[in-house]
Length: 120
Image 1 (cartoon, rainbow, N blue to C red):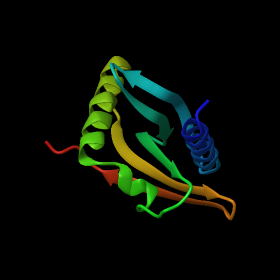
Image 2 (cartoon, rainbow, N blue to C red):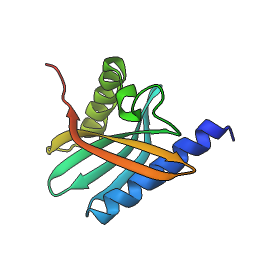
Image 3 (cartoon, one colour):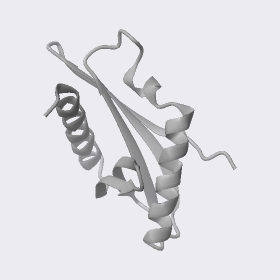
């Protein structure tokens, strides 16, 4: 497996552990619709939380969470909409981002709740 894939998998594991510790229920991991994917889908109370995880070894080119472009947000929203319809859910949805730095100095985890919203 390529190193960047291993780093991404590690980041997702860190995010899942963090969410579990905060009381979130993990519903799906790597949920795909067509060619797009949501890393983690969780539930917290009556809110479905769609989570994008970005993991890097350094912030030389910017914080990991800054890599979630408007185009990526649109794709995540499209997949989230499909998930809600497919599962016949009538709950509030929220979009979170985990920005994770992992290197020889340890790890830094930033959980940004309600990081972006659909633009109707």
